[in-house]
Image (cartoon, rainbow, N blue to C red; front, top):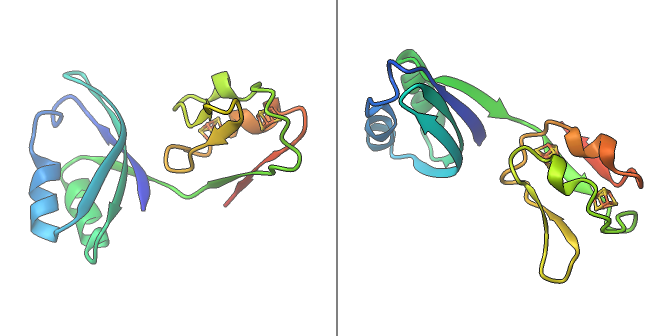
Length: 128
Ligand code: SF4
Ligand code: SF4
């Protein structure tokens, strides 16, 4: 699953995640992070047989977990690679590739929808 983890300043230096990873044998991948001593957030991808127990453990210790449930689809027939959607993405999930086509990384997308309204071709759809 993919989720945003949010940390308050009082727990930002605690080893909650690493303890939980060891305890529940979770594969943990950080896709994006913005954390300072004042707190912050992290977009993660996790899997394992005890994901639910992992989530419960970290929530009990003060980490707010906000699962990402949306998936973005770009209709390649409609997209004209104009790039209008690229700069609007807050997590840099949309990029211009080496061949100048526009690509969307669903691993990073948080489903905010900023790109869908910007597309003149209505090529982007968010699926729940
Ligand atoms: S829905 Fe939001 S996060 Fe996802 S690609 Fe579009 S702008 Fe980026
Ligand atoms: S705004 Fe629409 S047409 Fe333009 S690159 Fe993005 S998805 Fe393609």
